[in-house]
Structure formats: C-alpha cells, structure tokens
Image (cartoon, rainbow, N blue to C red; front, side, top):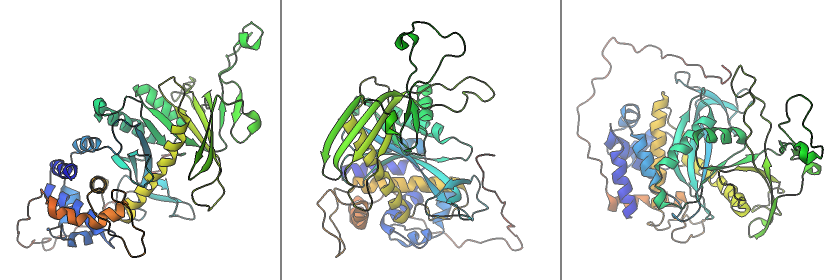
Amino acid sequence: MKSLYAFRSALHTCFSKRADALFELTDAAITGGSQPSPVHLSLQPQHRRGWGSFYAALRHGSIDTEHLRTLLSHHPLSPPDSRRVYAADVSVWPRCDAEASPDRGYYYHPSRHSSGQPIVAGWAYQWVAQLGFTRDSWTAPLDVRRIHPSESAYLVAVEQIRSLLNRIDPSTTSKSVPIFVFDAGYEPSQLAEELAKTSTCASILVRLRSNRCFYGDPLTPQECGTGLGTAGGRPRRHGRKFECPNPATWPIPDSEYHYQDVQYGLVRVRAWCGLHSKPHHHATVGTRRPRPISRGTLVLVEVSRLPRKTREPQVLWLWYNGPDAEEPDLNLLWRAYVRRFDLEHTFRFLKQTLNWTSPRVRYPEQADRWSWLILAAYTQLRLARGCVADERLPWERPLEEGKLTPNRVRRRFWSLLVELGTPARAPKPCGRSPGRPKGRLSGPAKRYPAIKKAA
C-alpha cells in the first residue's frame, strides 16, 4: 500500500499541463473497464470533470516522459537479487480510416486485413517490459515509444535498452548481465551489431524461423593440414554451413541440457557456439565493405508436450549473444523465452480492458500521451495486486491472495481509491463555452497518406 501511494504521488508530478485531468483520466481508465467509447470513462465517479476534458487533456496536456521512465524503473517486477529478463516487442494501433492523422505507416496485423492482406495503417509502439519466472500473466512495462515509419525498429530498441540500463541503479540489482528477449520479427545479427556500436552491456535472445542457415568460422591453413596460405583471392569469411531444417549438417553440440518439467514434459536443449549468419548488405550504402560478423550461440529447444494439447509441439530455435565469454545457462534461456509470451497477455489486457487503442485521436502526440497513461494505470494495478481481495464471478475459480490476475485486481481497485485518495485538485466551475463564432467554418482537415517504408 505504501509503494502504491508513493507511486501515485510521484505520478502526479510527472504531469506538467492538465495534470489533474490526466491523473483522474488514469483512475477512470483503471476502474472503467471495457467501454463502447473512451469518452464513457468520463462518467466514472473518479473522473470529476466534464466529458470534454477527456480529449482536451490528451491534446493540450503534457507529460514528463523521462521523469516517468525513471519512476517506473524504481518499481521492478522481480526482487533485486534475481536475474533480470526483459522483453521488447511492437504492438500496432490500427488507424486505417484516419486519413487526417499524420505519421501513419503500414504494419502487419494478425486479425485485421486490408484488401485480403494482413496489413493495416496505423501507429506502431515498441514496448519494453520486465518478465518474471512466476507462472502468471504479470509483466512490468518500463518504456513505450512510437516508431516512425522512417525509423528503424532496431535502432529504437537499442536506444530503449541503453536508456533503461542507465536509469537502473546498479546497487539495487544483481551484477549479472540482463537478457532482452525478442520475437522472430527482429534480425539477431543487426541487434547485436547495433548493441556493439553503443558498447551496451546486455545479452539478447531472439527466436528464429525454422528455415534459417548459419555458418561457423573458416578453417585456417594449419587446421586444414596444408600449412600454406591461399594462392590468391579474398580469404574465406564463412566456414561449415549449419542448416536448421537439415539435421545432417548439425555437428556435435557444445552443450546439452535435459529437464523434466511439469508443463512441458521432457525438455531437451542443445547449443552450438560460435555461429553467425551471412550478412546480405554492405556496411555503408554505396561501398563494398562487408558488414561485421556477429557470432552467437544457436539454441535448439525440444519439448515432449504443450500445456494445452491443441497441437503437436514444434522445435524452437533461439539465437543468443552476450558480452560475457562464459557458457550460457541453457536452463535460463529456454525459460526466459517461454515467459516472453506474458507480454502478449499484457497487450491483450491493455487493448481489451484498459481501452488502449480505442480513442480515435487525430494526432500521434495524443496517442503517445494516452499510451503513457495506460502504462501508468497498469503499473498501479501491479502494485495493488497484494492489497485487494478476490472479487470473482460465480463461474470463476478462487485464487490465492497475491496471485490475482490483472482483471481481478481492476475489479477491486476502486476500494483502494477510497483509502488512498487522489492528489488531483477538485475541478473549478466554469461558464458555458461560447462555441464556434457565428459565420466561421473550420474547413476540411488536411489529408496525410500512410507512409510506406520503401519510400
């Protein structure tokens, strides 16, 4: 309760303009739940202002994002002495018909289609959240940034990682190198290359497609048994080929791990060190210089069953790269990626329950402010999960104290607001708005076509 009260007091100081309206809007987003329209949140008792202040606060308000990022980093998910594992992923805010909204791009969307293709126009937001090894759906989102269509998701991810590690106090965390988990939409060699440029001390774990190919280091003339150099030509950069779908090309693994898990049955993890992918682009546009090679550990995870027997288990390929030269912990790697799916549950809760992508705002800056409010709302629910009682529906099974889901904590959060209070000031009565002057027309809004990355 004390940490939640301190967080709410510090959160109010992160709002520069329209601070009271933004703070009450956050409380309304927590207690309101899923609404047919976001403006219905203004009818909540926690929102003491008029319905017009909803969009006015998003348009004219101001949030000190750096202060808020620092505040979030002081409330981690796991205890300080545990291994830090984070996940980074992109979630799309669809705005297909918003032709008057600038900075929209084309992105992949699994459930919405345009002209028969799973592509939508909208804004893409990259989230960074801390993961825990407890079997629940809780994560700790620490940063969110909108990716412009002209920006690279790799550069934005590296900048988020670097700024996050700079904000964390090393005296309050373990000395182990943190691990950042990525899905298959990220190229591991580019992530490792960008991290090496910034000298960021972090390890990355990326899921791979099952048809990828990797290469080892080429053999030297002494290893070949000739003892002579090449007669001419460029030295070889790639050695023996490793094809993931072809077991005949797999050498003997450098390390192997077996474990009997309750959910996944027999888990077998194999690792091959010192492998790299073949870069297909030059280091600089217009030059013939090759890109640097990023070596890492290729990890194969095989399980005998899945928690839900909806389909047969498939092999999982991972690529690990870290600054430490020691052998990676295979037990930690496969568990870290399994917990990455908790971030998908967080995205679903933010969109379906906290109405993250429901407001039809025109400008992306308004969407940025609303995203930060939703992040702050979810953090308050995480801090309150041990302070509320279980309020379950008749068909739901009871849960132990401290193990409530985000939705069950949201149902009882209103009872905490009675004890915590609010740092927001009461609204002042104002007169009736004069409205638009007589004879003045707003005119049609400017149109902004969605931006293609190729352009």
